[in-house]
Length: 163
Image (cartoon, rainbow, N blue to C red; front, side, top):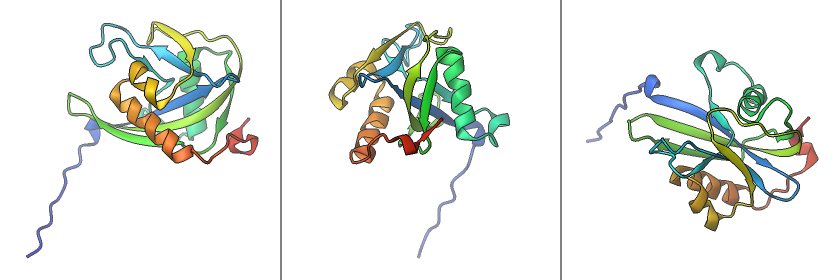
């Protein structure tokens, strides 16, 4: 006898979040300090990016990423975006909601970083799998681990970038 289990979908409890590894010419990534009043993020860093809003479901990823980059790092930051996602991870939050993180990579070109009120500080930091645990929540460590594993043989080439 075969049993089939039907899963229950609860779209209001599922989010899609785009995150961007913005890398400068020194091989450092832009990381954003999370507010200390958040128990989830306390003492940790975030990456630029955010959730896809319901009314944005038909908007192309590059436009969504551009909106998030401008919101979180200022309007003058220029970058070249790699067109394809570089890693994924799914995560269940303590409140039961689930998030699918889609990671993109971009090369920082120029511009002054001006952070939004969503973060308290920023820094450019070389990130390795070893030190990622120091800077990020475990879900982002997993995302970074996937990034390294999936991209170890891929070179960041201009033909992979969007102007």
